Length: 263
Ligand SMILES: [Zn+2]
Image 1 (cartoon, protein in one colour):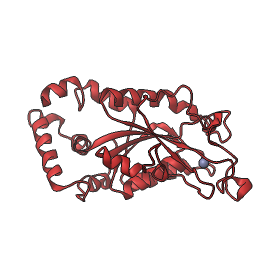
Image 2 (cartoon, helix red, strand yellow; image 1 turned 90 degrees about the vertical axis):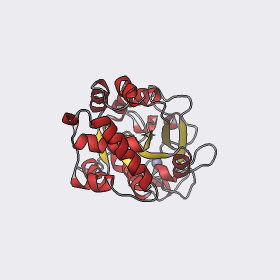
Image 3 (cartoon, helix red, strand yellow; image 1 turned 180 degrees about the vertical axis):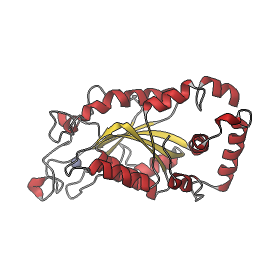
């Protein structure tokens, strides 16, 4: 796990979403797990503490046909995130953790589109093929779908602007499920992933960016790179599927060995 002083400051930030007792519990778990084998004592272990303390969710951002090759607003290599996201989905399912998917869900006429004063060609128009999730994306049947950009006068990018089929906003869903940390992947790094991550940080929710499961538009060269920097500056951590699967194999948090140890 890549880290920085900023991540550590973020880690120890105690606010209304991370009450003191939770931190106490975290330290108890930490010593319980690591006192016996201090050789694994490392920054990684400390960072895991935060993840231990918070319930997690996998947030799949806008993996829709129109953002994939041949789509109306294709992100170059956008479909490459699909097989990687499927592996994350499998991990979260096994851990009994929820999966949330956001989607652009525009009316045919909206200020979001160039013809009506916006920036973009028409894309992800409600009910069209282009608005569907990529056919190879294996979302679990109980995935919570958040639709955004649904009204004609709205230009929304953040998943936090979206609503599910019960009319709940993303923040409300996260609160109801007791989720304090989002693992985020999808499209596009420099728009909807970025804005969603920044909104999460603003609301005191932890973020890990799945760097192997995001792709950017890069309308201006370097946009994706700058987006990653902004997310990290807001406290986001980074990981990859190889790193998580490696940790699980190595007896890390969530492995069968670890569960035995915690039982
Ligand atoms: Zn859009």
